[in-house]
Picture 1 (tube, helix red, strand yellow):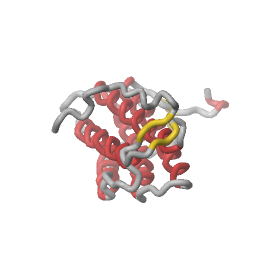
Picture 2 (tube, rainbow, N blue to C red; picture 1 turned 90 degrees about the horizontal axis):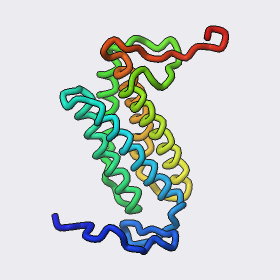
Picture 3 (cartoon, helix red, strand yellow; picture 1 turned 90 degrees about the vertical axis):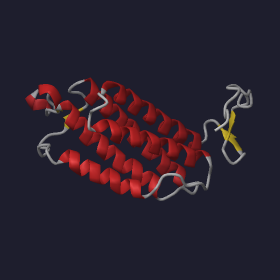
Picture 4 (cartoon, rainbow, N blue to C red; picture 1 turned 180 degrees about the vertical axis):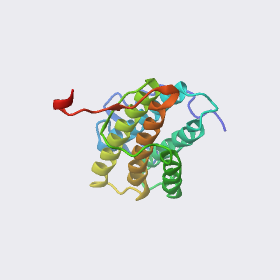
Length: 184
């Protein structure tokens, strides 16, 4: 592959617009750009989470694959009408989620974000994932999106919740349980 970005700044966005992959230009505050930016932010949070994990961790290859999926999703959003994210990835996320959830105890309380640094970072990624999903739902009211994209993010937020539970219980750590006001 040749040099795709030989010049980083173009000055074309100085007027408050940005170019999409199909050549069209839209406002930087357009819902599509909000969705692209939020998916990018989610990918960055997963990168931070990966920096906390060992390469041999069971979550590392799963999260690495998710980062590629999110980059594909961003590409779809940047090129209206283009499909990159495979619908089959939703089922793979579900299967991985089920495997991770097998050994966790059933939930009896709500869980607060935290427990340890990797778990807290995973909860942050989960919260941003839910925001990205909301952005896609909002965008879908005015633009055609693939059916898989919001479903993928919905499943991914569930996956990140279970991964955070797993991470919080590592090395003798515990999940942080929410307590009702009368029990604090």
